[in-house]
View 1 (cartoon, rainbow, N blue to C red):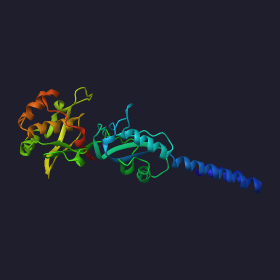
View 2: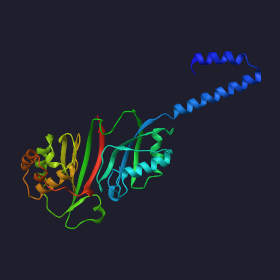
View 3: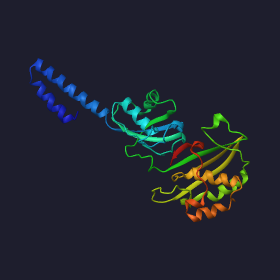
View 4: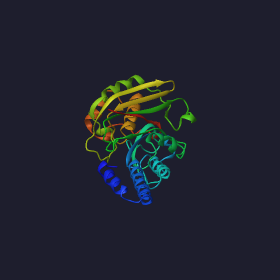
Amino acid sequence: MPEKRRGVLNTVFEKLPEKRRKRAMRRESMMSLEDKVETVGAVKRVRLTVAYDGTNYHGWQIQKNGITIESELNRCLSALLQEQIRVIGASRTDAGVHALGNIAVFDTHARMPAEKISYALNQRLPEDIRIQHSEEVAADWHPRYAASRKTYEYRIYRGEFPMPVKRLYSYFTYHDLNVEAMRDAAVYLTGEHDFNSFCQTGAQVETTVRTIYTLEVEEQGADLVIRVCGNGFLYNMVRILAGTLLEVGEGKRKPEDMERILQACDRAAAGPTAPAQGLTLIRYEFV
């Protein structure tokens, strides 16, 4: 309570009979308590780190024809916090794509501490979606506008026959891939380039220039992992990169063809879009 208001009230209270003075002081105390509750319930912005198995979902973004990661987060958060919640996602992954660390934010009046929301929300979410971390951030912080480095992995299983337990999390090939040729091709794609050839036709973006910091092709037993880190990715860009590198590994393209593909700025110049299930968003790093 402001000191000036407190002084005026004390003067008024002193002039009242004792019983009336006590009643007036109690009313004033209750008004002060309501003010405190309202302050505690002020709007705050909460950031979530979200992991999910994308197999059963129609991608991240809300769709009219199916359940999505975003719709499940909205549903469970709204029920938990007893208010209408709408999350904003950093990466709107496609149907079948997985994530270990996608990012979402939302605004809430709830008094629950931000760091406790992850524990309570995980009790309500389906078992294939789990919050790894929750924290309060600045009211104007936005995951799509904040400078960041994003890392994706595309996993390929190589074998004579498919492995059932890997079918939802990797792409199967029986081809004997030339891994060194794929690594040589990756060098041409590293750095700042116009990746229009690696963007799905019809995507609406201001620019198709992106920077790839690292692009690695790593053997892990029968698995081959294409790991890419960049400042941003176009629609289907990582899957088209993976599909093109696969063609290099199969001998359908040469590593030096990557220069021509980049210069073409034409989706038809690059390889196919690799299937969604092999792709996982690994992490966001905000810089």
